[in-house]
Amino acid sequence: MKPLSPSFPAIVVRSGRDSKTWAVLLAAAVVALVAMPYMAHTGTTSSFVMFFVLLITASMWNLLAGFGGMVSIGQQAYVGIGAYSVLAFANMGVQPFLALPLAALTCAVFAIPTSWLAFRLRGDYFAVGTWVIAEVYRLIVIRFADLGGASGKSLPGLRGLDPVFRGALVYWVALALAVLTILGCYLLLRGRTGLALTAVRDDETAAKANGVDVTRSKRLVYLVSAAGCGAAGGLLIIDALSVQPEAIFSVQWSAYMIFIVIVGGIGYLEGPLIGAIVFFVLQQLLAGYGSWYLIILGLIGAAAAIWLPHGIWGKITEKTGVQLFPVTYRIKLDEPAVRPPAEPVRT
Image 1 (tube, rainbow, N blue to C red):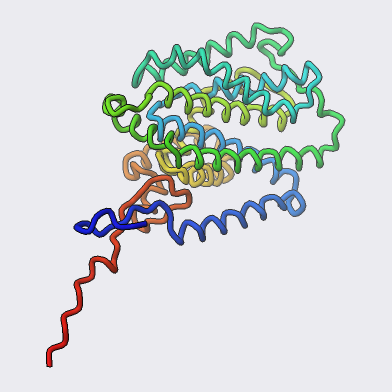
Image 2: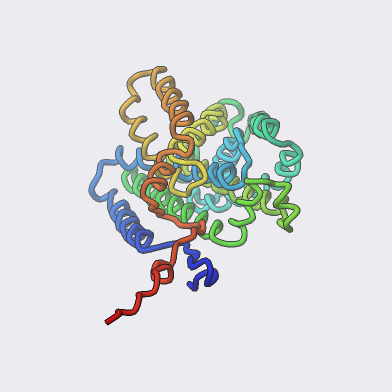
């Protein structure tokens, strides 16, 4: 790109060689993950399914709060709706794996009237309101006997599959959805929508004054986040082969999303990936400590919010400038242009 002006010899860049190198490494990592069912035990792949679910939901919450400025503690509503949508479609004879995209679409449809109500609230009221909405959806679901009521229900349509093959298939679908989620967020944020969301997050009034369609941008990201969380909920029921309303609509899902994003780095696409890895490792190490597990997670989350306000990835990119998914512009000095001209040699 050309310098901004002769008097200010700098160029605006988005990605560099480091981003392309990391893209190759990430692609190699995905290829290695694809081969994992052939090399690892079924229990290991099942654990990674949960990792991918956490990565998907955290990425959706980061898109909503980190880029859209909408702090929600009710995204478990769409995790639950997604799971029960898969169950409802399976009861009608749809193969559960084919019901996954239908569940995501169902969540997006439910999010339209929900957004009309939620967007009337601001700040803390929006956060608490989304939690209340999630509880309302839970109370509605348990009224349907065909969906198991308050006790939940098993998922039909997969009982005849070989357990090993089913586990591998669930793993591959979860991996594919995680990759599509990250790529989808990346492509969304690199365009005009990403710039609009950044403006809305920083100052909604100023963004509206400069011609940004605030409501449209917020509703778009809200629908995308709902669809992603719905797909994650569908994965959960396919992996567990059953669903229970108290568990799938638990606010604990939002707590996990918030912890992952805060620790990893809010407002960075890399944040949920780093945070999910940290959370996954802590989960494996502290699983046997009972209630202390949640206490330790809370302490780590509080410490990260105080001493690492931009998360682990925020500190890394501050020190190194590395970006795995460059979605923001930065100014780089055009070094050859700023060099002073060589003085003539006097004889």
